[in-house]
Amino acid sequence: MPTDDLLLRPATDADLAAIVAVQIASREAAAMPPGIHPAHEVTAWLTARLATDDVWVAESDGVVVGYARITAGWLDDLYVVPERAGQGVGSALLDVVKAQQPDGFCLWVFEMNTPARGFYARHGLVELERTDGSGNEEKAPDIRMAWPGADPLAFYRRLIDEVDEQLGDLLARRAALTQAVQAHKGEPTRDPEREHEIAAALARRAPALGHDRLSRILQAIITESIDAATEL
Ligand SMILES: O=C(O)C(=O)C[C@]1(C(=O)O)C=C[C@@H](O)C=C1
Image (cartoon, rainbow, N blue to C red; front, side):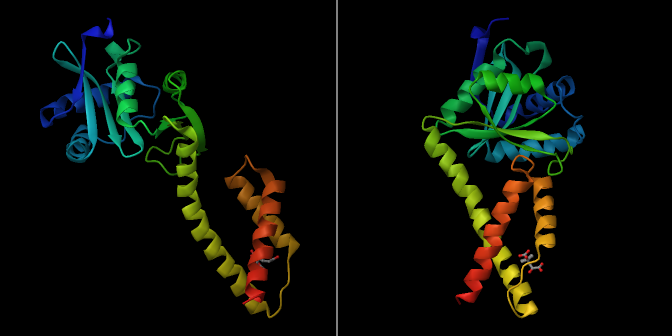
């Protein structure tokens, strides 16, 4: 069916039941881990989200066939009923999302969901980072993708600034711990075996960087932490 029959409009409270049904049907048919919330919990969740988030529906002949849910900088949900998959409904909704978030946005997609990953890649989204799934409810590996918007450099720099806020806090905490151990030892001493173990642990969390690079990064962090304490 062509997409010229589609009406794209902001959702209203009256769309709640339809949106819940779209999400459940779409998830069941998609290459995703099974939903872990029963319908009444999905309903409660989306009721609250409708009040706060920017939700758009795609309507065909008066029937909601897909929806997108947006929060600042994120596309949180994009679901299309299985009967209308591959017919441009998702693309039309994604165009709405791009128009609503011209400065770019991120989303999480399950690694196993290769059709969705291909769809997003075809629409200009890029892969940013991967997780082992330990941080999501389904415990399934996922991928953060991004559409970098009108000014990609500014978009990526904003994301770097967000991560560096956390990195700065972590470096301050780590330096304080190095300094505490060194103070306990009484004089600055290095323990290469211990540093090797730490680099190995870091490499398990950041395999793309690998042991040798992380070892050099760790060296710099420890050396600078010790130096900072001696300069106090
Ligand atoms: O564990 C120690 O012995 C420390 O002094 C701490 C620390 C670190 O900051 O992790 C610093 C220097 C050593 O070479 C090894 C590790």
